[in-house]
Image 1 (cartoon, rainbow, N blue to C red):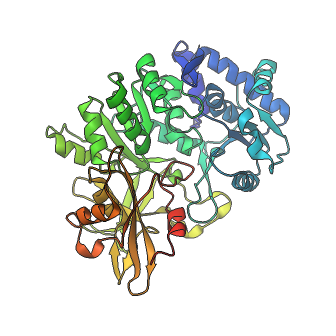
Image 2 (cartoon, helix red, strand yellow; image 1 turned 135 degrees about the vertical axis):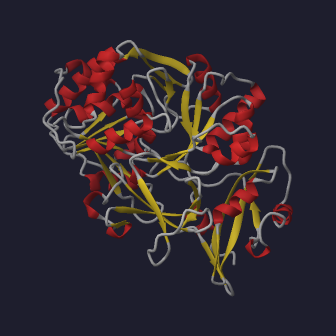
Image 3 (cartoon, one colour; image 1 turned 60 degrees about the vertical axis):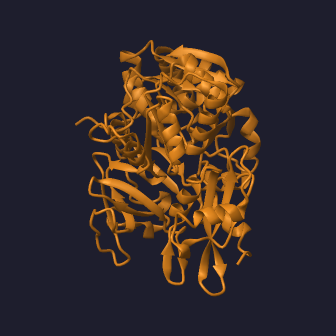
Length: 511
């Protein structure tokens, strides 16, 4: 019986879509343009070079790179060599990278020249190779490798680490089989719907949970792929979308807010987009409404590193004519993709009904869902094949997921629970608020109380007291934060999410 291997994606792209383009940008300027035929040739020589260096089946080969064409080549070349691609998060500190690379026992690391300094504490057995001239020398030297060494579909193809918002980062290994099935789901009409007719722009970092799995999906489908290079600005993203006639792009809501503001202020042509996919946090209503009014179809996906990472998508089963209802649907976390199962459970482990009211912890299982962490850490996160996500959620009668909060972010005040996410959404409904976060702070009487931190929109002048007074109209009185602090920016984690751990530490003394 044929094995399900991600290495088959390259062969399919080479044979069926050899002329489809792969384009690389740097600082807004095109730096490379080639096709899947040339891509496959470079990948096969790079895989052969890795084998010649001593890389063997099962070895971890790490990347520390921005979104450029060489990083995309590593996505195919490392599995072709029989090894496991380990994408290191370049936004972590050198100490954190050293821990993760050591924990994964990386044998070889390929790093961008401007990032090599982050590896001062890392000494892999086969060394560190920069992705500039040294990389090109490897590709030129070959030798060409067209057939991978024998591998099982149950072997690991990729290794990613969680962002470590609670404790040390933990490794999540993705098998060939799991990634192939995840990729099929990404190409479904009820998922990302990526096809050979698409031009995909990779804004989501390739080191972040497989770039949401989109690099594999685009390669398997034969879609054109565009890599924007290091830290592209929203002006450059808008220009690339227009120049390349991009049809699909994914990003976190904070980037999308800046993109929308840029297009409103300076203009831009987003008409080629058939899908702008948001993930990482619930998008503000004004963002969904604003993009829709520009004619940009907006979707939301939900997932986790532990789910490879995609689990849901907000594509309704029938068109929704009423615009406001459509916006509300987009702001749910969507419906479960085929191949997965889920349940919500109470504290005693009893399954709860899908009525949009019952609230419990979300559990997920399926062929691309982790059943353990790399090296068996934190076994309590797994229960008889179920991943305990840590998300507190409801599922409504239409099968839509509504994430209420993270278990670690719920606020227990006087024995009653307050949702930090619901408070954040209420703050974001204020026309003066661009971004907001709510965390628990200790309280001498109520044990915990919410504290809110808000970033104002450009030109807004509201005070924290004014925002608090307006918030009183939107939430139960006992939910009201002790205060609303106005700040210039919220701290972010390495993958762009609000860093609530830093906020809790920063404001722990405000009781």
